[in-house]
Length: 365
Image (cartoon, rainbow, N blue to C red; front, side, top):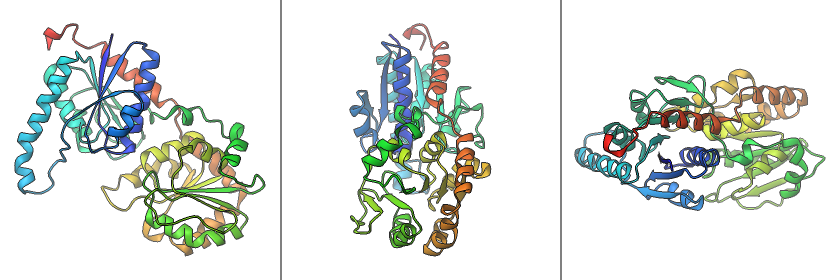
C-alpha cells in the first residue's frame, strides 16, 4: 500500500487544494494512504479530520522577518520540526511528500530531502511563497496554478478544485441554485463574497450600495462572512448570508461576482465561467493582484483597488457593466477561456510520477 505525506495549510487557500488532490489520489489508487502534516492552529486542524484523513502536527513556525527573541529561537525550533518530520517519513514509510505551502511545508521539504523522499510542490498563488521557492530547487515536480508564476521547474496544472465545483454545470442547476437562496428567476443575480472570513471594505460598500444595485434591476446575494456585523436586510432583492456552504449553487444562481482575488476564488470563477470585479486584498506581498492578471488580461474580469472600491465606483463603474448584458455575455466566455477544471487530476499525475522515483526500501533512506 502506497503512503503519501501532504504538507501545508493554515488557510483554506492551502487546505482545499491539498484535500482535492488527496481525494483524487485515493480515488485513482485505491488502498493508498494519505497523511497530512500541518499545525494545530491552522484550518487543517478542523478540515482534515472532517474529510477522513489523519492529521499529524508540528509547531507553527513563521520565518522571522526581524531580529528578535523569536528569530534567535527559530533555528533550533525549525531543526526540531524537521527532525520530527523525518521520523514521520521513516515510521510511516512515506513514498512521496507533497507540499502546498504554509507553515508545515518547509520542514517537510527539508525532511524529504534528507530522507531521499521524492518531493512534489503545488503553488496556488501567482507570486510564490518562500517555502515553495526553496522547494523548487529540490525537485522537478512543480505544479503551478497561473501561467504568470515564475518558479523553477514549474508547469501549469491549474488549481485542484472541489469535486462539486469541478463538475458544476451552472445552466443545469441554475433553478436549484435560485431556489436554494430564495432568488427571483426573472432577475439577474450579483454574488458578493470576500471569502471564508469576509472582506470588510467590500461588505461596507455593497451594503451601502445595495438599494442602488437592486434599483437597477439586479438581486444581490451577499455572503458577508461569519464575523461580519452586517445582518439581514429588509430590502427586497438584497439577500445577506453570514456564510455559504453551497458555493456551487451560489455560482449556478449568479450572473456576475464581486470578490477578493484569492487564488482559490479566481480559479473557481474561471473554472465555472463567471465574470467578475476583483478587489485584491491590500495587505501582504501583492499576490492577489498577480492572481487576477490572467483573467483580467483575457477580459473575463475587471480589477479595482481596494481603496477605489466605494459607492461611486459601484454607481458609475459596476452598474455600467451590470446594465450591459452583451458585455457580461462576452466576459463570461472570456472568464471561462482561462479556467482549468482538471487541476486535481494533473497534480495527481505529478504525485504518481514522483512515486516512481521513491526508494524501494526504507533501508535506502
